[in-house]
Length: 488
Ligand code: HEC
Ligand SMILES: [Cu+2]
Image (cartoon, rainbow, N blue to C red; front, side):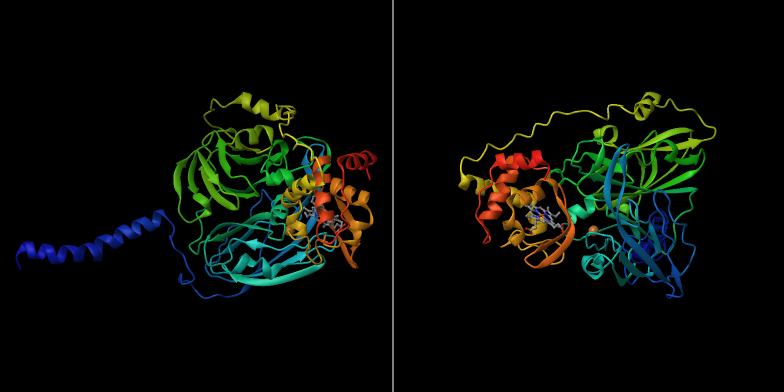
């Protein structure tokens, strides 16, 4: 055979049989399989175990099993008052008592038997949408759970990765804004590289009735949430959850892996550790990694895995590099590395700023929200009220005022609404909780304080009274001001 013919026939053959698989294999040692699927071959499912669940910043131990199994996961939803910042409390809705919710760690191809319990003292129904689930709603519909109930479903963890889970009960934004999110890690069947320390960090944005630092029990502010203008942006559910005594701790020479999530509900995080460079980032919590990264984006409802070795001692500061959030809204944590090392010329001044109780954090920024021009007559009031209704009430009471049976009372032909105008004004001004009976049906839930001004309250109520077979009264801002003054 002439050499040129041989080249033409054998060379491609050689390439495909010998060289290409080599390349492919070499690549697969660098990157995990790119498209894992249900077909991903694995040993058969065997046995049964109960998942170890942890609260942040702790992570359950790595999975050493070499086979998939049936894993039982049980999470209890509770609505609890906890610290948001010094002197500031908030009613968090939680998966397991804290924000973020319990960390769940399973292996690819595990079959997860999931039970969601909603504590009898809860005011709201809740459910869970796990982004690790392949199936409608990520389990949301299957787990819709009234207070004092528990529901169960199962799913197979087909895709490896780090996934957010969150509540998806209407109004979804409000449930997430109150802290209903956490992370589930599905380890690839090959397992993960060993590291010395693993931590669990989730960012979230919070919208309170008062501004940043305003003392007392703060309510949820729907208007600020819709405007995506949070008072707090924090790691692990509170200002200072990762500073001082609660700073993350590791030693020089150790490798660290951060499982980072972003519950949102609104903001995207520019996650950064001041003084460190991530050796590896599994961007968006997927199977591939990038190397030598300074700042990585963590989408709302997404995650990332950051790995790095500690080469020197000192405080390394976790921030959302949208930097006002770090220094003025709380998105700041500390990883302290002890031991010997080249002492970095590290921003001591920055650290001082962090520890100063008033370190520029409590500021009064003049509000520039212009009040809408007052309505001149009832027609204008109704029109303006329709707008306020759409932005503030429709999520719960529904655009047509029908409400949601068992959760949100109707405003259509509501005997409760029509019986007492001042009482209705009070409900919109201060929120409402405890048992109420509307058109013969009992509700025992919570309407949050919405932070509306007198004009908006007058307009929205005039609108509600004028439609849906209600009494048709006009509510004037002066009447709202009187109820506000009387604290009714
Ligand atoms: C986050 C959900 C939510 C939002 C937003 C909300 N409400 Fe409510 N509302 C409720 C719940 C829940 C109750 C019943 C509270 C209870 O059980 O004590 C209620 C009760 C009421 C009542 C008394 C009962 C009735 O049906 O007549 C009125 C009036 C009312 N809301 C008006 C409004 C108006 C007007 C707005 C907008 C400005 C609004 N609500 C926004 C959840 C909400
Ligand atoms: Cu919920």
